[in-house]
Image (cartoon, rainbow, N blue to C red; front, top):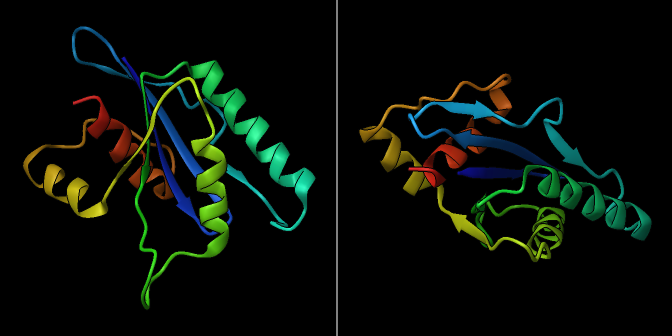
Length: 136
């Protein structure tokens, strides 16, 4: 089974893809791609390119699950409006249902379960936790 966890941070979507083998080991499928970023959210061609590139990544992985770490929509710590554009473009992927998981859900899960997945960079932590959560 394969899963992609996505953590959206401002103008970038941090992706982490893993596959769980039958014996329970994990294989990192992310490769050299660590995140997808846009510079100008008012440039239509850049938004279309973002969608094409991230959907091509999904096609290459062919995941069973895709999920995004939920962000606050209101209040003092609300996420940027650009991040919601990226979220919408990701949700347009029609071959696998894209779901949302709240950070408190991940925190509660990892209080009781160890993180068995190795990630390359610290900024991938939330995305890797989400991918691991999806496969358990």
